[in-house]
Length: 147
Image (cartoon, rainbow, N blue to C red; front, side, top):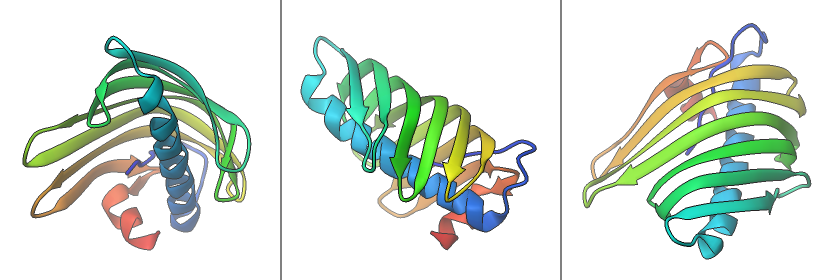
């Protein structure tokens, strides 16, 4: 799961949730394409996006649960939303939980228009999913219930 935080773009909650969902889909797709080419603890791949465009992913990769990557979106289209900009994201897992942190700035167009600063933390345990941070000035915990 991935989430976004926006500055002055003026995206409402519904558009913010749509942007977040598109970003999550694009990053999930990129991770799926990056995993088979990861070698020697690092990865560099340009992944195609679900509906066109690309996202270049590079950085440290131990496995799909432990990574620190930089992603550069180039007109990456998912769920009717085109994404450009860059994002750093890192994931780590233990036997009882998984954590993900994303930070950067993304531009959205198409189904959603605006620019957003990303600063999101997600923790998944056997008992719960906790999301903190904001997207376009909206609390991601509230946005996650809308998509």
